[in-house]
Length: 113
Image (tube, rainbow, N blue to C red; front, side):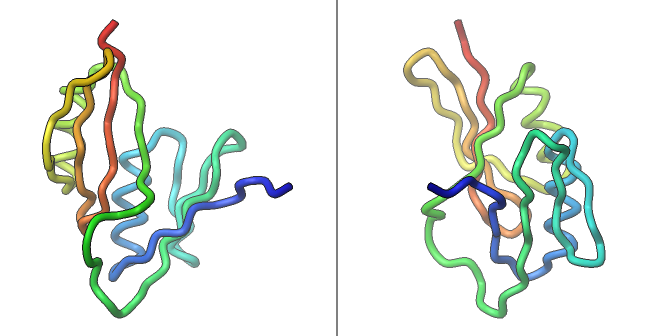
């Protein structure tokens, strides 16, 4: 049985996207030699792999962020270059569906209970 080691995200500008996610996620830092984001011992490594083709369509896999102060965090991420696609409230949760600077979807959520 395998253990999750890393998540790889295809992108046009690996270093720029790695820097965005290093600022977006707590405890991550950029290894500029490989343009990847590293996590402390508690999370997977996130690799950014430069590819020539642009993103097309909706992501089949995306990252979810759990935060306190969701509205403030959404604003902070917008300042870093993210955009909000839409806000959702369902099943006791509220979340924002967002895109990183290259259009990869991710969610920012907080329990409403």
